[in-house]
Length: 278
Image (tube, rainbow, N blue to C red):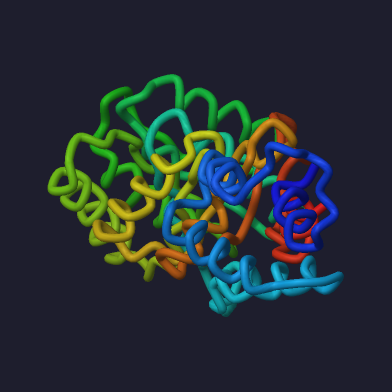
């Protein structure tokens, strides 16, 4: 059942649940990770609605909460460098691999940079994915300086005339200052070779409002140009996706819906709304 079915039924006056009232609907929407501000706005607007046009009216309200910024991956000629950031456990490294698969399938020449050097498993995982996909992965020794690996990756990507370099960055979230320093250094070092075109933040949809908190911290630490939302499937309410776009005006560019490489696609706002409303 869609997230807003009960709200639409309430507005239409067709609900048969005797215990259903506005406070219950509000509590249900809050539990879906839409966030208190957005839920409050929806409830106030819904109380003014009547009739069969309720669903479309709610849909229109939700549409206005999406970012109007481009959802396309950066365009242009030459090497496009994409830093992928996010805390450990969000599916960051897997998302880098899935994005590489998506681009490689589109006949793009891709190089991977395994700069999450503080996690040996991440480097090994990305290297394995690269071999499976058929793209080159640049890595350093265990514990190597992330900025150094990122720099070597950029040099190699230029040497082979790659179209995209996807850099998996360290996912440690100690505090905002450390995060800014670490990501800032990687970006500065890489840009000695070529400009960074995109910074994509990976958010786990199942972490709820914690995902919004992470997005705020990262957007303050580095200029995030887009989001990859993982685990946005039937088991995740996924309201946080709309909450983040509404609060921070950062467009979701890709979503992950499962573990396989094919479980990755550009974000379609209308399809997302359909899932919430049906």
